[in-house]
Structure formats: structure tokens, C-alpha cells
Image 1 (cartoon, rainbow, N blue to C red):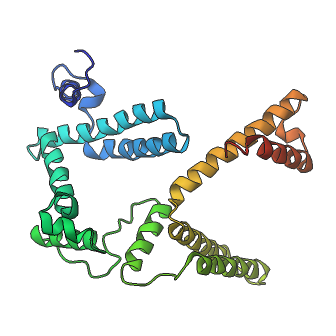
Image 2: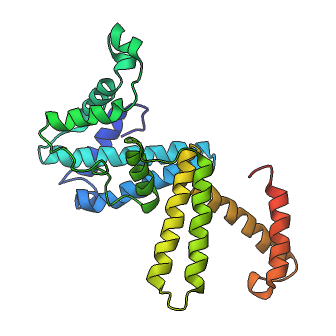
Image 3: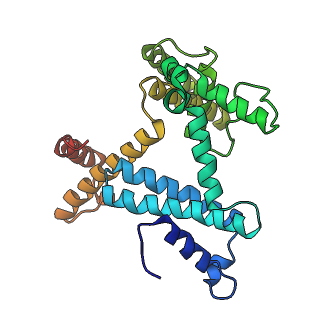
Length: 270
């Protein structure tokens, strides 16, 4: 077996790995349930490579993510459910159907992408396969999504029926309001951890709303902030190490001074 740029080679390799007689023992014993966590993990690693602007890593991580699709398709083929070509056909059919302004006739192209068309197309698809219509505008947002992503999707759903802030500055006012409520809860004589958690949750939800209004992906923004924090903190550790110290040996004032220096050194990168 040799490497190839052809997707069919990847499918052949996956089939060989899953072969009951000659395949890899670990791959053979896997199921949809055991592979699903790896699928999620690979998607996050793709996002991390993008946040780091690392094209070689992105190439490799996209390959790992593609493997996940091939893996699930192979297991489905083994039980007679569907195969990888069916996956490709399903997504190409969906993309063509949901973009009549690109792939449709002259009339559809001239009409352009109508507001709300994507949601209407999905509703038509649900009806075509006999799936029940959602009882709420917010139905269809999986509870299993990471909280940050789910908040964004819930807000987008609500916005489709006009339940939304008029502009980003209104959301900033809401953020200030939520911060004040956290402070009030902190000062309250009978505050509880649950009440403080509720207020912090409201603040985070409002922050996601601000990101959405600024057309910023909140998850991507937080990933970039994480990378920035790690890079700056590493510079603090390096500066302290040069003086024979560790962060545990340094005072907060020392580390804050080094943090400000790190910010200045990395400003062009950040």
C-alpha cells in the first residue's frame, strides 16, 4: 500500500485496517460511539491550527478530520447502512439544493440569496423525510454542543424572528449591566455559588452576543486569546528563568511588569 492524493486510497486503507482477518486489532474493535470523541477532538485541532495560522498543521489536521468521516462511513458500510460515496452524494445534494442562487436556473440566480432561505430549506428537508417540525424556533440546536457554540447558535435562531439587539453598543451596555449584577451578588450577604454562577453565565452569554454582532466567532476568538496568553506567560517564565527564578518565586508585581513587557514584545503578532 502506497500513499496517494486520491481519496479512494484513503478508503482502501480504512477498509484494510477494519478487515476482520488481517486488519489492526484496535481499529477492528472500534464503534461509532468510541470513535465519536476522536471526531470532536480532531475538529478542535483543526480550529487550533487555524487560530495559530499554521498551514502545515492545518493540512495534517484536515487529513485527520477527513479520516474520521471515512472511518464512520466504513463502519456504516459494514452494517449495510451507507458507504462513503453516499456521504458525498448527500452533502453535494444538500449544497446544491440550498444554493439555488448559485446552482439554480436563471430566475433563481437573479433572485439572489433570500434572507432566511437556509432555514426554510432545512425545514423543507425535514418535511420531506417526515421529520417533525420543531415546536420552538430554538429547536434543533444540539444540547451536546460546547456551551459557547450552543449559545451562538441559540442567539442566531432567536435573531431570525427579530429577537435581537439593535446594534453592538446595546450589547456592550448589557455587558456592563451583567458585570454590575455580578458585583452586587458578590456583595450580597446571602449570596450562593449557584447565584454567582448564574450571573457569570449571563455575562458570558452577553459576551457571545457581542461577538456575534461584531461578526466574530467567539470560540475562535477565545482560542486566539488562549494562544496569546500562553505565549505571553511563556515569556514571563523565560525572563524569570534567566534570573534563576520560577513564577512561584516571583511576586505578582514582578510578573505583572514582565507581562506588560511581553505584551509590548508581541504586539505586532497579537
